[in-house]
Length: 409
Image 1 (tube, rainbow, N blue to C red):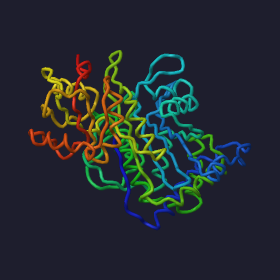
Image 2 (image 1 turned 45 degrees about the vertical axis):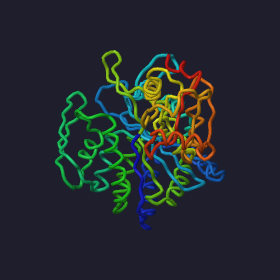
Image 3 (image 1 turned 180 degrees about the vertical axis):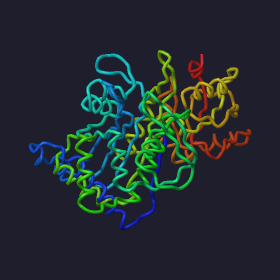
């Protein structure tokens, strides 16, 4: 998981963001039917202090193509109660099970049934309600950036790539520069021999540069050109009033209130195609922390030191290997001060250990007693006297006693 957090506050930044969002209102709203004018779903969420979840889709423009896959997928989630916002980037190669029972990359959803299925797939995967979507065609993206006068950004390395089938020709030099619409489209779409996650990092960097630079609109003719482009290349189920309310909500946010996160996946090949298998546990952790504000520890966050208190050959070492395979962090192994422990113990060595002990205990298939180090003083002193010395980072001490050998047999 990649996370970007903003810490610098700029009072004028709120107005730059507000102008940017209002520009989106002008761009997209002009193409919405009048029957949607007075819908105020966003306002109702704000009144209740509930989250606004908006799926943003960037779509390829390939001449003659009947089915178009989403090239970019991002969930924008705004906590209206705490005035915080999270942008969760979803890799297009994530390999998910569809309602039909078949498996495809997540970016196929738009080609199969448009934004409705794309929203349903992301909502189901993240376990979140997503009521709004915004679809932007890359051709429109390119034209709008040009109308804005370009975006200033530092390109860290030269980007060169040609895809004749996709009508994509990228040639951008390294260095600080103002990207034109064509160059900006190449910058956010470039993949080359890199992973999709690296491409997502550039997309997030571009968004940050766009927000920090703000939007400059000079005269009605430019506004009209942007509106015409929006009507041609963008669509959404947000009403005009919804977008106005969304703009007012975002206006209250500073750059330090935005956090960008990228979901990860396990690279694999299916039917000779590169895909990313979802990391379910890590994804749930991202949702818990970013959306629900709950800190969730993963197995890797638990550092455990394993002791053989039963006397079986290689018991501590084999236990460590099993725990490592389960994703736990093992800081070391040793023999206990004796081999006649009738009970197995899980000893919390610090505050974190106290919070994490239950999680580790659930993975063990034998009876044990969870204790605090301060309530285990005599044993701790005996262990120390016998040479047991876990690293300072260790949260838990696992003493394998009688009945524990089944864990590794």
